[in-house]
Length: 210
Image 1 (cartoon, rainbow, N blue to C red):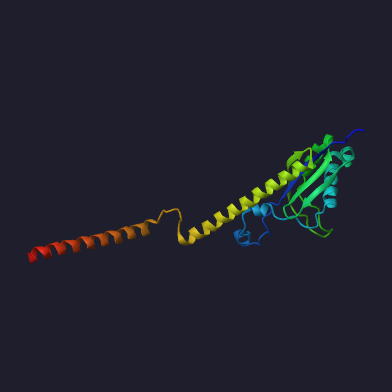
Image 2 (spheres, rainbow, N blue to C red):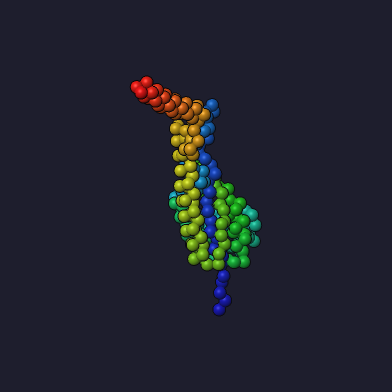
């Protein structure tokens, strides 16, 4: 009995569109979401993208790129084994001999399918981040990348919050503004001078009593 070998493609969906296009005369920065870029790029995938819709999208793209020949040789064994809208991650299974055709079809996809005939296709970038011989390796890589994305998002949020606070209260790295530093140094020198004057008066007073 001949064993049919497959390849498992770990896929990430990225969304480069920052948001709605601002109307004429409006500042584009006012419509920019107040979230780190990594969170914006890895935003959740719409719920209408199901495994069946994704498989149909891949087949249509293969048909567009390679014609009937490509659609025929990739049809056997093509399926979506895992799809997470929350993390925008999917695992696509295909035959080992033709996985590069499926990879190319995913890479050349620029929009998600329309949710309805009157709907608007959502721009996206589909990136294949790993090709494995077993689904277990793809699952481990998906977990590792999800954890790294969470840590990076937290770091970006902390940096953004620090920048906002520094804009209000000044830098937190120990460096003071020139005007503030100069005034503090003058006040310190004035206090030291007053202490020295008091000492001289006491000494002179003791000399007078003697």
